[in-house]
Length: 140
Length: 212
Image 1 (tube, each protein chain N blue to C red):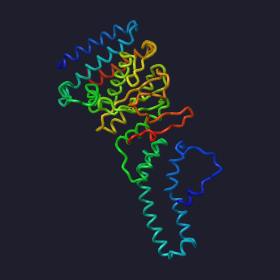
Image 2: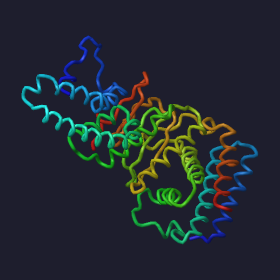
Image 3: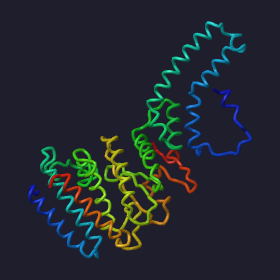
Image 4: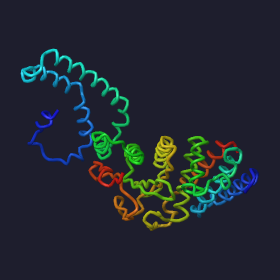
């Protein structure tokens, strides 16, 4: 279990990589994924400051509906602003498409690469708008 | 009320009543409306009834009806926002449960809210539900072929509103763009269609597939 500082260092590390990848926009799938992983660490850092949560891994009860992602989603709904909810869930949803290229319900797969599904502005928006919203709203 | 119902216009082209979205809603309020009660009162003061009931008795009944009317309208007014957002399937289900005096399940209440909320977003084509990792999951199929940020914002605002309303129920949402061929057909037997938008814009409801 990471400390507050460890979460923040990892978040900034991921954010820095996303910034570098954005320079060429060649790897949109990885940019989205890295932005989401930066987001998770900012969110976990915020949880660390909340005595009701501290760590997702230690606070979650056995068989919690939806596992870690379900728990994080519920905690964000309960403790954080609509803006954080919006940005976090947007990145969560899109990073899943970027990572797996499929929709689990029917096991159907994208027929074209994710680069075609997102345009450059979408990906830049995830970084400039959504990640920035998370960071600023959580005071990091 | 039976008399009113039996005078339907038989020359009208037949339309499945479940497809008459707004009509169903309007009909309910017509049945309960003041005008109908006034019409009934007028009939009761006529010869047919006063043959059997004294004028005082009719007046007594009329007062009782007024009281019931006021109670009913108060109840309906409080529910107006909820009722007016129902689609045909959900509304019919609600009427069905109401007339049987049954309580609707929380599952159906959630589905009704989901339908009422998401059908207002034009790009939403159909809504399925299942249970995944112990959460009631909603699969929202949308018509966009490319990522649409504005749409995602609207969907997530709606999602948060619903989740806040049903805080005690673990819910999850997935948004599936038009990357699969048929938007209205998911063949997974574990998922249940609760709403879809037909090509003519008329929605089909949850009542045909709901297991609640």
